[in-house]
Image (cartoon, rainbow, N blue to C red; front, side):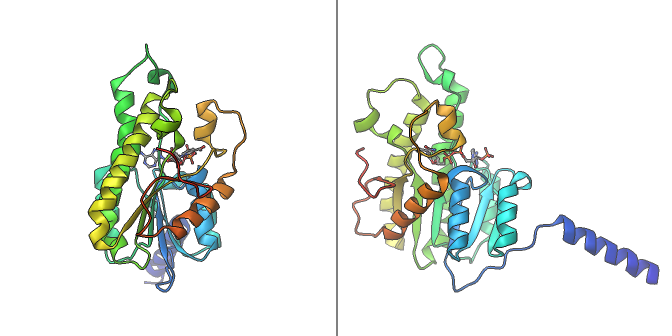
Length: 264
Ligand SMILES: NC(=O)c1ccc[n+]([C@@H]2O[C@H](COP(=O)([O-])OP(=O)(O)OC[C@H]3O[C@@H](n4cnc5c(N)ncnc54)[C@H](OP(=O)(O)O)[C@@H]3O)[C@@H](O)[C@H]2O)c1
């Protein structure tokens, strides 16, 4: 028997080392769920809201590689790290089920891809590359919003937000060349979120679109842009302040990180 209990204790010890600590949510604090939060602006959102004392559901395609999130969780026990690929319908449903009954005050649809740029200009067009960008940047946010609408509706703040871009604006970028799929995806995302805004209004849910500015992330580097940019931390703080200011009375137009309406 003593040998068995020693063995049992060792197994428990190994499990404790291998598994991340379970998040300790405070039911009196608001909760945010962020897609694509292992790097870039998504990670900065997780850091911002954790430091503000929120319960944070930080999702990533590969949580086992999300070292910055793991460090955040060690600092703030109210951070949960969950697996979510926004193109994986089973994962979306499973996560929504796992959090059934948990109010989510703010859902941030942040995850997106720029896509392979050579396929986004005349001469290189590729259907698979197009579909991948649209699945991640358009259908993913819509489907995630649908799956978590009930969690948002039962919260205090009731907000669903998607990160848009000036590249999706007909007024600003209608004449630009290249970046076809990314630009089309953000224009389509805007339209989808406006539809959600109308359809979820009766449940008290406020749907908003915020553009984070030019932000120093991998996505911006991959775009070839070399001009001035915001840090992810400054952008996330600015977007979060805009989210906090959203009301049901707003006209629902996309807004920029500086709080101004983004021409669309
Ligand atoms: N940076 C800018 O200047 C800028 C400007 C305008 C708008 N935005 C928007 O801001 C948001 C964040 O962009 P960012 O600059 O932070 O980009 P980023 O650094 O490239 O990060 C993108 C994030 O999305 C995740 N992701 C990609 N595909 C996914 C999928 N199928 N399921 C779940 N997660 C997925 C990535 O995870 P992996 O690590 O697993 O790939 C990563 O966490 C995006 O919506 C982007 O369009 C950015």
